[in-house]
Length: 330
Image (tube, rainbow, N blue to C red; front, side):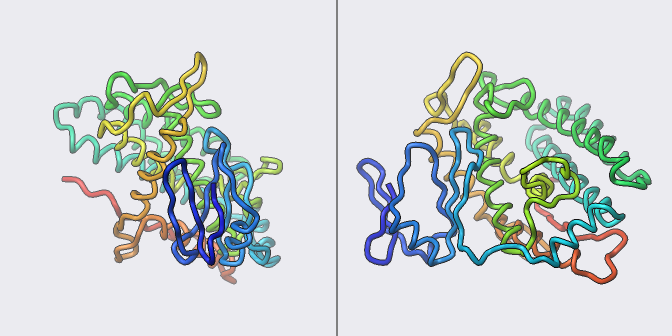
């Protein structure tokens, strides 16, 4: 239960209570079985704190935010223009390359930490490197190339998750990605982390003045926030790292899950553990544009950079706007 007490939020959970100043709250994420008072909602909106409602699988199903937040008509027009020109193609390629590069670098880091299992990594690494090389080909048109690019992204992703499954504790190994619902514990945690991350990317777009519904890659998804789906791929690595470290660090166990015949989801005991782990990971600093920056701030920096690229009178032929350097291995 979330209430207002004086000018603070009062969070109550069975026998626990916590008072927090609005100055210390960025977002309030509400999952199933939670309640919030209208006074607490007003306090959040007065302090520009957005409320995010998640379904049982962690996917955002609604959001309440300050009424003056929103995209500008100019940026929206620029987004629509970019989706139909060379800039849109270059942006898509940049986003997919960054996502695949993140996967490649993370597997290399995991391999370096497991010299006794290095043979498990070679084939997936080769596949991912092959996808990266193919993404450097001379694509001419986004509409004609969209399926090819998505195919390369999918090939890399399958190799990536296949490799990750092999380093999981045996009882938590899995066969590929499963979404809503997840079919196993790993995917249940990953989907929940993705959902929380999705809400952060959406917020970053709104604050940067971008229209979340106008994307470049996922342009045909009716009533879907296409730009959020475009951008989140770059930052999925934050959720994936959190998930992998939870399982390989033996911090996840079956009492955190509701397991049924064809589905698996986090229960009320598991959700706080996952949220705490993800938030802690996002609070860590990494090298970004020659500075030490918390991971959570990289998302908003990149959203603002995208807005600036779109507003350029003469857009760069190959905009170099991704610069996340956080993987170091021997």
